[in-house]
Image (cartoon, rainbow, N blue to C red; front, top):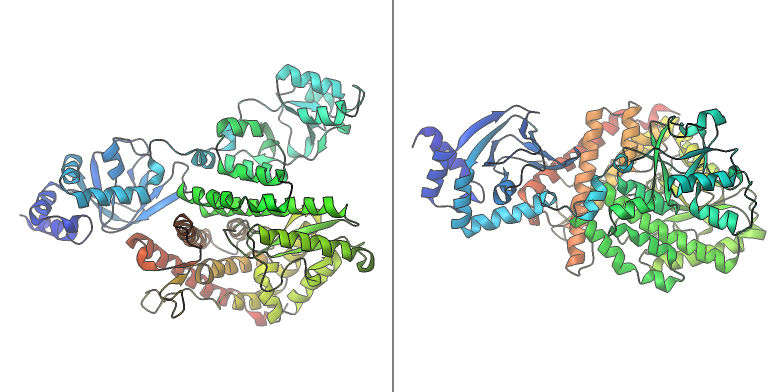
Length: 633
């Protein structure tokens, strides 16, 4: 054999599945291999191309992406790709490009098939690797994946029906019947600009409201209103909208969260169409997130508690269908919000209408849309400033007990730190909440820093959500102008360090039932969220979700696109490893937790987990120099 072929053989011998082959077979492969060099960024396999060789990475790294461009996997030295196409004959479904300069061995497809037929270990390896890494490349994608890959724009096949706000309800009904639509948008524009109906594209500011077929029945027919009733008196004002570049998954979440069935679709503030629940149902009738609709239809706490197995199944299904952690977190948070909303509705039915307006708050991971399973309940209430404790507090204390007890029954543990609406400290008027945040920010003592990981992530769940929005605006304005607070918050965000030793080896838990494991939340996702929160508050972002906060922070210039991208990838990777671990536990009837033994992970996952922890370590070092507590206010 030539020297080059000996080098090929010896390199193959180091990595599975080739390390289990005999010397003769390794010699045969080495003689057949062709070598190609790819520069960083260049394409190796393009979408739709035929695969005729097994690809083996001699050096460098490659990146595999989904059809929509989202990162799916990264592979390094000694790993293979292309086996699915060789086994099934399917053209490339997931494109591959060189992440860095890469040297690739091409092993002919005929030789690959001989190895597959001759050696059971070889066949088992490529089949198992394919199931765990390339699950998405099967010939028929699951229904949920279609929702996650389909853009809203793909569902728009006609312009949005519109009518002027001065039109009568009879004209509205006639146009809906003529166009065979279930909704019509009411436009605040001169009649001459609406007469062409679909030629113009109204912008967001001219959409006054929406009227649906159910509105005509419940508001007009049921109440015996005359046919000349103006449309403006029947419409739902300021309808919630969705952008056309969002996924159907996101549109469905918006509908379920707001309990609406129609969404105007916008493209850069221009109206391009309308989608409704029927469109999504006809596109995909078996999506697991319809669980939310069932929650909102339950009539008592016992019925809600019986839905726990469905929630677990929803989580496992999304993980197995390779949803991103962002999607999983959004779905689980929406389910959690729905439980709260229904419990609050049941409480109001039992107690009567609230004596003053209020907003029930989600805090922490639910507010960030990053919740997984089996979390503590963190919540509070913002009350209208007309609140009088002597007159009104008994009502809201009873409402809080009903909701928090109900949440405990449906799987959300009582908060060990008593951060719940049942605690009078976290049930206050808006003015008191604003004053509390000003005090925390102006005098960042340990209590304020302790609460920062929960209270600085908040969102309205039920009631007058404008109260929560006002509070978020106040926090963003005050926190961004206090360098002393940001410095103290940055110091606090450096306390939970990633579990890496001096030589980049994992530092495992010692003793206890979680010995020899890593807590992916406490040592991974939680400190990453802390880091991102500091940058978000500094940039006056009002976003709550960590991925959205990164976008705001990059746009404001507090992080470079590269730094922000690294943080996003690290958070996604650690989160999805955590989700898979919890899903595995559920499927094996174990209680899900956050502790994982890194030895059960593949070499690829271990290597990338170390990289993700390295990103966290560097991000914490950057905080030390970017924000300093002694800079004053």
